[in-house]
Amino acid sequence: MKVAVLGGYGVFGGRLADLLVRDGHQVVVVGRSLAKAEALAGQLGCAALEWDIHSDPAPLVALSPDVVIDAVGPFQTYVEDPYRMARLSLKMGADYLDLSGSAAFTSGISILDAEAKRVGRRVLSGVSSVPGLSSAVVADLVLGLDDVLLIESAILPGNRAPRGASVMASIMGQLGREAQVWRGGKWRALRGWRAARRVTLAPGLERVGRFVEVPDIRLFPEAFEARSVMFRAGMELGFLNFGMRMVAAVRQVVPFEITPRRVAVFRWLAQLTERFGTDRGGMHVEVIGRQGEQMRRHSWTLVAEAGEGPYIPAVAARVLMRHFEEVPPGARPCVRDVSLDQMQAGWADLEVTTQRQDGFWQPQFEIAFGEKWNDLPNKIKELHCVADLEVFTGEARVTRDGGLLAQWVARLFGFPKATECCAVRVTKTRTDKDEIWERDFAGQRFLSRCRLAPEAGRFRERFGPFQFEMDLTVMDGVVGMPVRKGWFLGLRMPRWLLPISETREFVADGCFHFDVSLAAPLGVGAIVRYQGWLEPEQ
Image 1 (cartoon, rainbow, N blue to C red):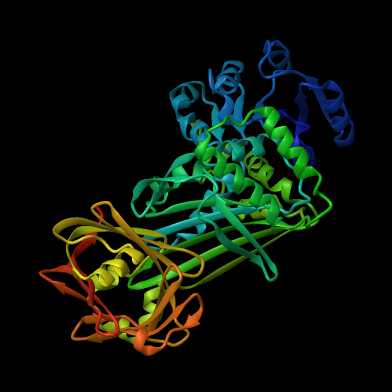
Image 2: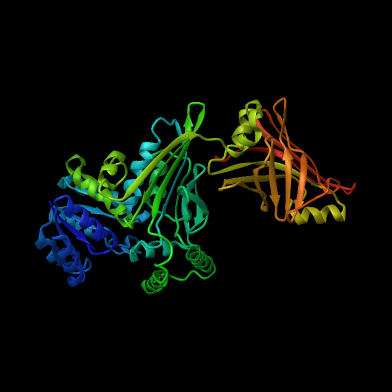
């Protein structure tokens, strides 16, 4: 087939043109610079065409391609008529594919579905790493699961990989900006380049990824009926990640625009570091779900060696072209249009290795409780089963001691003021090493971090500079959490300085209840007591 690759000498377009030439297609490298297009075409043994996607379409129409593949981008900047190239392709009687990673652009391509079916053509967006490859991987990982609790993906390139201007513009445009993310069965706001997590791609190959919005974020909740969907990206060098974090922080205060000139400056600065780091990069996809009564974790990892990472976003289009006759007409995001087996065959001639791991998964508090977990009522288990982010709402009564010292301690920890009844909201977020618990009593918030203790049957909770270790007791289905040890700024506190905790979790009238009472040592008296009920947020 005659294939016009728009942006055909770019980072990803050039790799795609190479793969399609290897497969015997009649490829035309299309771009604004004839010199660059002819240079690459000469290397690959194909044709070249000088054409700008914003100019008169006559040269492209005269070419009469069978398939048009847009690898230009950044697709989030296609504002006035975002699907102009797709419409033009249909008008020419050509099929259309693109390598879009823009959530809005890719999820919206379905508006052309009726027109594409009428003329019997295919219009697929996101024929790339996301959602083309990622959806193929997830479709394979969710097989056999009854419920999908979390789909979590990350793309983490090596520092020596070429940096495409459109990809950098897409990521930088999201820094510090809010996007809607499906977490805990609800759309929630999350700022770009937050929610950091360390990802292991291979032994000795770890990277830190942070949230960016890609098509998966909008498409996978419905496509796979998942409770949470998260995607992260990151760079190999820590100081580059730090620079992105600083830009994100500044944009939260001063929401300046990411212009092409600013992208060019950051890209130039990043290119100065190309001699550092490695040319190894990869992709990680993980699914957590239920299979009967068991909790399962299935993960898949790809590592690209020898600088071949930039070929991966092009493989989905290569595979789709190999199986084009099997692809039904219509306009849609490229979700499950190729299989993982087909993708594996698509990179068989590249330096790529993949690994899949399947096993059981336990929430943090199941590990902490140990065998006692089986003695807990289901309502308590539900409150302590956090795969990603869960929110619980209810009501509470708060009492506080009137003494000055007790009030000072309560204020130090951020405990809520006394009230007979108020709305309460508890948000639990799973991280690499712990769970963040944010309690909100009618606008009065305080936060702690809970993690496993070295010994079974205990957990540790940190409030700022204070950290306490609690026992986990279970008697007749009632959970107790007495304080056992404590530290201040990492220094062990003597037992006589430990707070006195009487904490109970129990089920009454079919609902989870809590009763937390804290008293200061040395006979100072009660600090705070809050008691009430919670249920999963609807």
